[in-house]
Figure 1 (tube, one colour):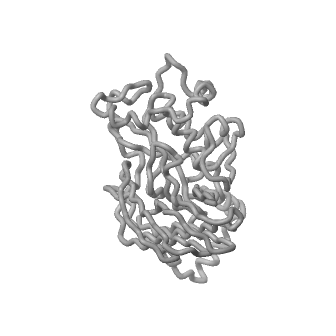
Figure 2 (cartoon, rainbow, N blue to C red):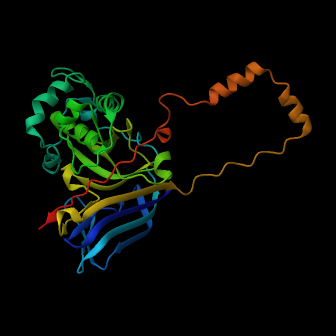
Length: 344
């Protein structure tokens, strides 16, 4: 499907300040499943920009600003084709169908960086919590284990918008039983690593009812490397696997390294006023509903004779359902994880 992503972030200051170099991660990752048709990146004030690919293959814009200003604005607009329509279209290698399993020696060196525990102080607390899903000595289908963890976070943890930068550690998320999408993704990622699975943090966008309305923000989830399938995404904020409605921008071993915008300003600490974030993700090739056929007076008469009981049944069948399809879920807007430091 064709998706248009509009992303505007504006920083406001009470007086002119200088800006350190900013790193911008807003360009989606292209591949066999994603093709960018057009891309616009507008930045004010005056600047110089250089593009690079980092160690994970993410497209990063490095922006320098020669003059002070009272406002800093980034606007990105991308139109892309997303072809990953069926996230379940994969076959695991026989050796990985059941957990526990070990990775092939040929791939282990590349995966080892994504298997390292990020929060060793939280490991005991996290491993204890994970015993409800799997205990040493047990055997379980690998995909079933990951889905169980993914849906459990979605169903039992409370989503909470957080304006603070950075992510919560897994122990903090467990203690609060709440967090933002980036906190849930980090919990999922670290849980998989406790099981010896390679996992990475993903930041990007999600197309759904909330983001089509505008005024939303970026999204975050986790990917796990499964032999035979490759990197597969799990979105614990929504309780689903990632598919055509998810657009990946950046992947990272460390959640702190995948912020959409990171930079600094120089000036009084109280000069910073606010950040305004507005993200819109719209499917632009959605089929239009067919026009209703003309209704003759005879058809109206027949319809009016339908029993009231049947009308009630039809209305109830058209009503909202629990555990509806992912596209019916509302993903709450969340501010971007932005590093802003004051330099005296």
